[in-house]
Length: 195
Image 1 (cartoon, rainbow, N blue to C red):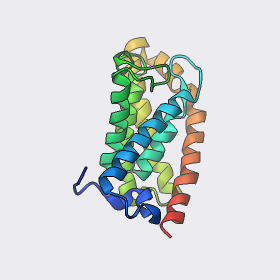
Image 2 (image 1 turned 45 degrees about the vertical axis):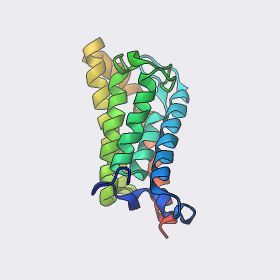
Image 3 (image 1 turned 60 degrees about the horizontal axis):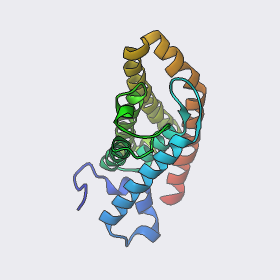
Image 4 (image 1 turned 90 degrees about the vertical axis):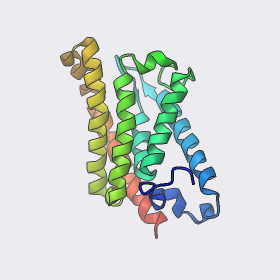
């Protein structure tokens, strides 16, 4: 089976809890979820408030959703597939596509999203998607990973003080809002679906 292994935790993919999906081939469902997640990331990149040097998008919110609802391996595969799509030139990033985006000023945030999705999913496997408090802790850690990668990478290009001022501070209010939104959504869905 695709992505088979002890870390797969298939029962942690919330969609598997829905009765309508119980008889669907697992490989087909996993590939569908991977495609759906990457498309959602691409769409969320376009929902943005223009800002220099990093567009304010809904991507981190989608990363939160993927991490909290997908298995570790599926989260990794989905975000990696999204980055691959951008690398080969598909316009899935905030302002387009191409290898340049994976080495440009915002590259750190993109790589941070990959690692954040893995960590969030790993914590969700430990039950962090089931309660509001634990979900908040998980997403705060995930957000810290994204911005750490982003600031460190951006800092080497424009200087760390400028990176913090332009690539972190303006985004704190919107990031807290997206965390609150995901925290309100995921544990509630988990309780409804697993009843």
